[in-house]
Amino acid sequence: MKFKTTLLIFGATLLFTSSVQAQTSAEALFEAKCASCHVKTRPSDISTLVAPPIMGVARHVKMTYKTKEEAVKFITEYTLDPQESKAVCMPDKLKRFGLMPSQKGNVSKEELTTIAGWIYDNFGNQGQGQGRGQACKEK
Image (cartoon, rainbow, N blue to C red):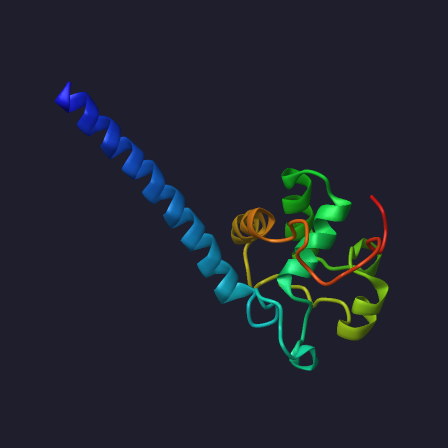
């Protein structure tokens, strides 16, 4: 019985550790690949921003793409090949920040899939973000 309990505790610890490591790894990728432009917290001075905060981006992605799978696919594809016709931001944000430059060569599709999943899980929930109204276009 003691062996089974020890094995169960070990398995639960391993599962928890793996989950925390995956979360940390995805967040580390975001920090390395995205955070120089997209901040993770609500800024106190929006005049210093070069891109919308990630919470707002995620909110608009979730307004447009209803499943995690669709949202991750969009973020991955858009980041590598941004096009104004695909943008899900509010028109004034697109005007203010311009179209995101392609990140092709700066981040791999696999890294983006990891980052996008982390963004979906951690940002854009009800009450987050500063945007109001509809996304740029409905899908």
